[in-house]
Length: 130
Image (cartoon, rainbow, N blue to C red; front, side, top):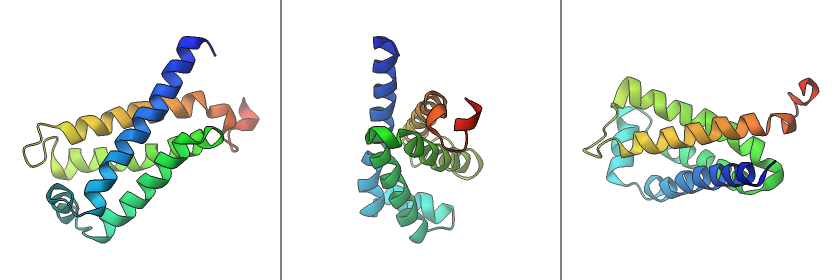
């Protein structure tokens, strides 16, 4: 990897981990917006806690160099569900947030796709193809 590729790679890791980690506070404390989202989805409170737990796991794995691939796969899956929830049930704008949550989810999605692509040789099931 070139120096600029390394910077992009590590930036994607940290940005995704920070965004995933930042939302944990709101989910674990039952912030009004989180409760609204999961109530609308019919998953309050258990969905909020499970989602937060999986996001915490993904964020931690993204910070561990040998497990970036796993953190990226987990975050890709959970954030895909979040984006689909926005598009199908919630709308891009939730409770007057001007689409900030949706935008952050899109950033995590792009970062996760990039990280999975870069780390594809480290994913056990895909190793044999690269």
